[in-house]
Length: 125
Image 1: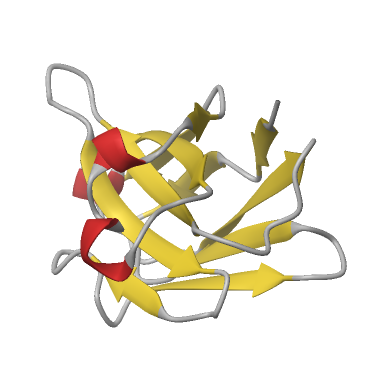
Image 2: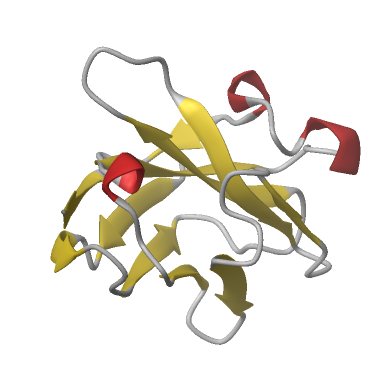
């Protein structure tokens, strides 16, 4: 059974930066993909970014050029570096893991088997 824990959320001003970390336990990230999703109040969950065990990455258009997803194999973690944050980035950010995910499915939430509890990111204007 995999377990995911997110950390690094908080309050930041418009244009600021934050770095989120997701720690995976119970499984080794040597297959499939790990991803970041977010959900703002009153809105549906949306894809943000994902990384395969092979380190290939996929990003939502809304965050391309501002966010970077990376992995640390030794720590079994992934990070999401968020720069040039905007008020519309405010949401609860969730980490997810799926051992059998293929590249074409990396942006689909339904492809992931395990989810973290989420961490709040608030960007003030």
